[in-house]
Structure formats: structure tokens, C-alpha cells
Image 1 (cartoon, rainbow, N blue to C red):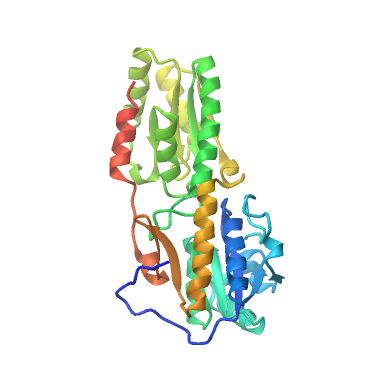
Image 2: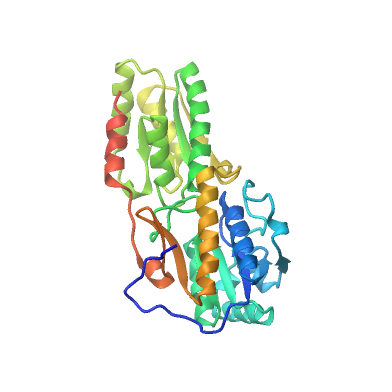
Amino acid sequence: MQAQRESRVRRKIMSEVKTVGILTSGGDAPGMNAAIRAAVRTARASGMKVKGIRRGYAGLLNNEIIDMDSRMVSEIARIGGTILFTARCKEFETREGQEKGAQILKDSGIDGLIVIGGDGSFRGAQRLSALGINTIGIPGTIDLDINCTDYTIGFDTAVNTAVSAIDKIKDTSASHERCSIIEVMGRNAGYIALWCQMANGADGILIPEREAFDEQDLIDTIMHNRAKGKTHHVIINAEGVGHTNRLARRIEAATGIETRATVLGHIQRGGSPTARDRVVAATMGAYAVDLLHRGETNRVICYREGKYVDMDIDEGLAMEKGIDEYQFLISRLMSVY
């Protein structure tokens, strides 16, 4: 695979990587196990040893490190979540915690580390790289909120889970001629909400990127569609907007239509990953090992414009990304009955 070369000079640690560590950090995402499997088997095929670090950076600070081999990762690609477990760790945000983690890695013989997670996880990898550990980041989050990549592991599975659940809610909403306000995950990003609105044919969408929404316009759309003969309504509300129950009460009061609130919650993080998430994860997992084998460090793997590339983590974290304006426009046009 030919990686896109960046204009800036790459930082390298000249020592040969003999032992690769793998950890998953932050929120779990379907497909993480497929990335772990690919990384382990690629590393073993390259003659490297592999160690798994349980419970992310918290587990690293507690020295929860295990040996891994190819047999250990058999049949895990189809399983959601992460076999290495995950956690958030405030201690690792401190300089002392980072130095402790780097020393534990060195004492364990780990000279190359693959971090699967989101932007917070990559900041940890960035610090470890500065402390002498070769680090590679793999974007794993259902939220699609890592700015340097067009795709993150877990997004497709999460969207399909949400779309399926919303379809079921629409069935009962239609039977009772209700309005349903459905909250989907996404943290401070509206990608899941936008895709669900377009896929499910909802009457409206609320996303953090358009926080200054006109509630009256939303009510007018519901009433317009009801006047045209539509007997049930669905509004998709992103987690970053929130206040779903209060919004449902206000819409019911303004329209006179029985309105129910549903928060889909963590069901979106679970389940067997889709084929797309498995393939993307496997490709990124193998790519991460290839980068370590070449002596690269402080890199993040991205999927951009249909290609797998890598870039400096510092550069990746500094990038900005927004909602696709054309898709948002289409979603608005499609909401009118």
C-alpha cells in the first residue's frame, strides 16, 4: 500500500521495533476487535512479538499487559466491543502519568504502540511518542468526529443499528399517529443523526453543528406535513443537542399531537460489526504494523478521499471538519411531505 507522503519531515525513532503493544481507549466501537486481530497477525507474520494492554491507559498504568498470539485473536473480528477492554484515565492526562506509562512500556520491552480510539486517545499517543515510544493511532469511534479522517471504525455499524431501531419506532408511531423525538449518539457531532435522518425519512433533524435551530420552523414542518395527510412524524435529535424529553413536551404542547421521546443510547455501540467496519479495521490494523516496521512514530491512519493514508498526529488533531453541506440541504428538502 502506497501511503500519501506529507510535506513535513516525519519524526522517526531509529531503534528497530521488536515488540508491538496494542490498546483500545475511550468509548468502544464495533470493529475494534477486527483491528486488533489484523495488527496481531501482521506483526507476528513480520517476526514481532505482540503484547495487549487491557483497559486502555488506565490498564497501562496498572501494568495490565498480556502476551498475544495469532490463535488468541481467532474469531474475534465478528464480535463487537473490544477484547482488550477500554477505560478513560484522568491520571494519564498528567505529565507524571505519561512518564509512568512510557517507563512501564519500556520495562515491558514494548517499543511500538498501536492506540485504537478517538482524539483523546491520540493525544495520549502523542505524549508517549515525545517520551521515546513509537506510536501509531487508529481512528475507532462511532461518532465520526476525528477531523483528519473521512471514516472511523464503528460508524457504519452504529448507523445501521440506529436506522433499524428508528424503523421499528416508526412502525409503532404510525399505528398511534404520534410524533417521535429520537435521540441518537454522536457526542458533539451530528453525523449519525444526519445519516439516520436521510435513511429513515424523518421530518426533521437537530444537530450540534446547527445549534441555533428554529423550533417554530420544526413545528411548522410537522403541521404542514400533517395537513398534507401525514399521520405520524419522526424528529432525529443528536446527543450533542440533547434535552429530548423537554423538546417532546414542547412539541406536543404546540401541535396537540401526542409526542414521545426515545433515547437510543448505548445500543448503538454494541453488536456485530458490519462488513465495512471489519474490512476498514483490518486494513488499518495491518497498516499500523507496517508503519511501526518502517520506524514511523506519532502517526495517525486516516481514510481520505477513498484512500488509506497516514499523517502526523499533531497535524491531524489540528485539522477541522464539518457536516457535508449538500447532504444537510438534501435532508432539509426530503423532510417536506
